[in-house]
Every structure is written in structure tokens, then in C-alpha cells.
Length: 65
Image (cartoon, rainbow, N blue to C red):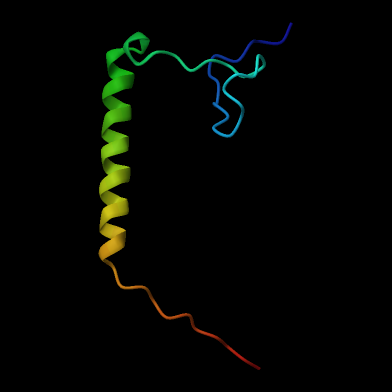
């Protein structure tokens, strides 16, 4: 018998009221280690995005033949 997956990748673009869509767990229900790791990743994502706004855009290089 095949094993059931222990993790689930949430579909961010599905209808949240769709019965087939898995419900996301409540934040408080997640293990503390998971909450800490996710918080660190979100902070890093936000700071990296903010740093990216300060970098001047590179000009597109075209190689016309």
C-alpha cells in the first residue's frame, strides 16, 4: 500500500472555499520550531526584496546579428 504524504504544498491560487482545497493550519497549531523558521524566512524574504528595490536596474543588453 502506498504511503500517504506527510507534507502538503498549499495551492495559493485556489478558491479558499473549494471543498477539495486543504485547509491551512492555524498559526498557533504549528510547532514552535516551524513558526520560528517560517518567521525567519519571511523576514529574509522581505529584507531581500527591500534591498532589491535599491539596486539600480541593469540595462538590457541586446546582441543584434
